[in-house]
Image (cartoon, rainbow, N blue to C red; front, side):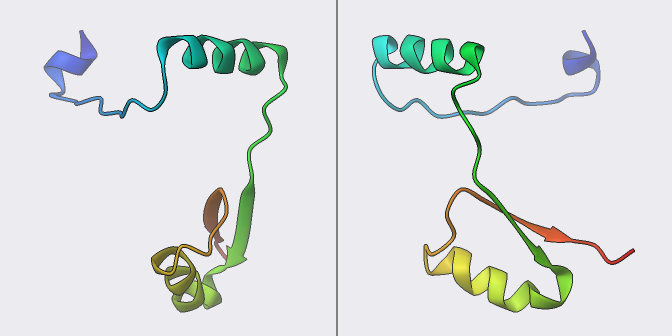
Length: 67
């Protein structure tokens, strides 16, 4: 009910067949999927944006905040 009250929207995209999706979900359940996450310091923000725009970022690219 929170989704309706807070007017939240859930978006997604469909890639592959239903069979491929089921296979992917089984791999996730078994823990055989490992994300690729690259963390760059906030000072390299411009470089990170260039990587994303140039399709050179593999997986997820995150910016680390200074402590």
